[in-house]
Length: 104
Length: 104
DNA sequence: CATACATATGAACACTTATTGATATGTTTG
DNA sequence: CAAACATATCAATAAGTGTTCATATGTATG
Image (cartoon, rainbow over all chains, first blue to last red; front, side, top):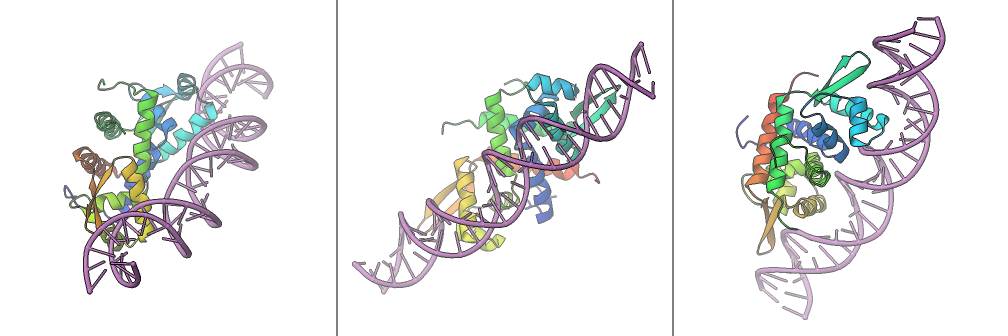
């Protein structure tokens, strides 16, 4: 794909779908919480003060979009970001937004 | 902010807000359409086959988040991405997602 | 100043989605 | 195999959002 080419309508839809998933504060917090090390569902729920059910629901969406992966370890399932692309995306965007904070 | 620091809850909210706005196919198409050169509302509507009203509504949201800027030129108003940060963000993410397309 | 053109706004609707509470599935241990 | 623990799923609800249609605001021109 060219540097500044307008994505096809299909690509746009896929891209939007990814953005949409990242566009929820709870999901973003879950992602950042799993950024450094894999975390179990329970740890996420406790660490972010969310219900286990809610965490599981969000993880399903994130899993469906291949933004996270889960590895079972006995009874627990540890989730981490799917790959370096995803984590880079998050970190880059976080930087963009931080440097972007002009007054409103 | 540190490279891998977990953003504060406030930052997370702001970041999510930005992602959320990018998470709509129509808005994304508008943004990409204005990526190379400023475009009038009418041009956007015609070029993307959207109603003038819809384009205007979306532009208001994008304006509110300082993702686009509009410059009046006689009767028309030309919109362009707010700054290099925003365009870089878009291009970077587009690349990420393109390289990310594994089968599902 | 009236008309035409370009953009913005308001109300309403259909639709999606985040959250909760209850329950089911799966996994280990006694 | 039963009990305990961890995670996933189901159903329901409340809140948010994209889109449309009608109308208003603003700007130039005769």
